[in-house]
Amino acid sequence: MQTGPSPTPQSSPLAPAAIEDHPLQVVLLLNVGHALDHLFLLIFATAVGTIAAEFGFARWEDLMPYGVGAFFLFGLGSVPSGRLGDLWGRRPMMLVFFFGLGIAALLTALAQGPWQLAAGLGLIGLFASIYHPVGIPMLVQRAQRPGSAIGLNGLAGNLGVAGAALLTGFLVQAWGWRAAFAVPGVIAIVCGVAFAVLCAPQGPAPGRSRKPPQVVLPPNLLARALVVMTAAAVTGSLLFNFTTNGNTQFLTERFGGRIDDPAMIGVLLALIYTLASFTQVVVGKLIDRVPLKRLYLCLVLAQIPWLVLAAVASGWWLFAALLGAMVCIFGSIPFTDAMIVRYVDDSVRSRVAGMRLAVSFGISSLAVWLLGPVVKASSFASLFLGMACIAACTALVVLLLPSETATGQQAPTP
Image (cartoon, rainbow, N blue to C red; front, side):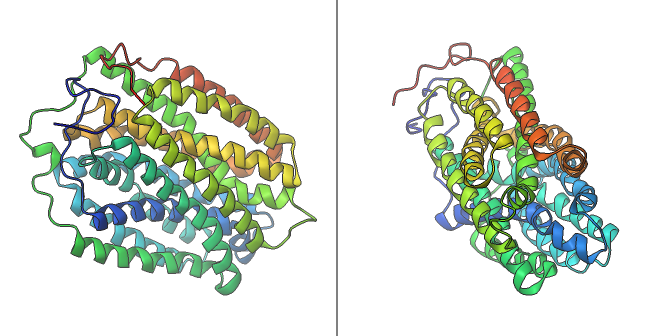
């Protein structure tokens, strides 16, 4: 059975079976779900200055730790989400995702104080935890070119990051921070209705299917791959959370005196995220053609000089440095999902993804808790230099990834 231009040959134990892709409207809704997932998690970080002023906080850094619950539950909830995705079904879990996320956002918009806000954000994080261990495995379950599917899905997710910066900025300016939660909440519920109508039942849950496994690896190589993908996901998630949660205030500080309009800061940040997001499409196509380890290592190493430059730059030089850093950070995101597709069979893919996400997002949620206190005690310069060190640690981890030869793969052909 032909699988398209994949680096894994037909006879390889790592090659997933190719079946008919999902209908276009289902693929579209799955990608929209990824965009909403990231958008909801960053509404608070974008609007934190306005919310802090309304709740009587002197500095935005003091309110920032109240958002840590969202990211902690985003990671912790991945374990039951992945298990339910494999054993109950991915379609019903996606319905819970859309409707739950929308209702949680509407409740957060009603918060009257910091602890009610923290509870609402935690609920958003819990429902948002469903997408990565369920939505992405559902998408690649039928993809003939998984790298390209992951790349496009990553683009959608990071357009959600850009949307958080752009949409939240305009909604806060026009109608206040509560509208920044309420409007996307209604959109999520509408998407849930569309998904219920357009996505047909998927048959037996993957974990209850009697199909023979399509991906088989020796236990030692599988364990090694799981350790590498988890460790790399932890460091990558730390960079993602530090930047996406701090970039609004970072640009505001470094553009002080030049640009003071929150909506314009949102436009600049949305432009950075949008341009950086397209890197994932390119990376996704390359994953289907180029050895994964070599490609991943190059992108991780490229993060270091851009983060160092961003630490010391200001004004438009900062804009260029931050764009370069986000291109490399966003471009590295597809690799974890690509490794799961490469090394883990579909029957357990959601559970493995859930456990990996619980560890990586659980640890990286500390970035949200530490962001405000670190910047307050030191500076954004120290934060970005620290992120350059984290990128160097990621490169060391990637070096441990099993090679194509070790896993029985042939060299890819362009």
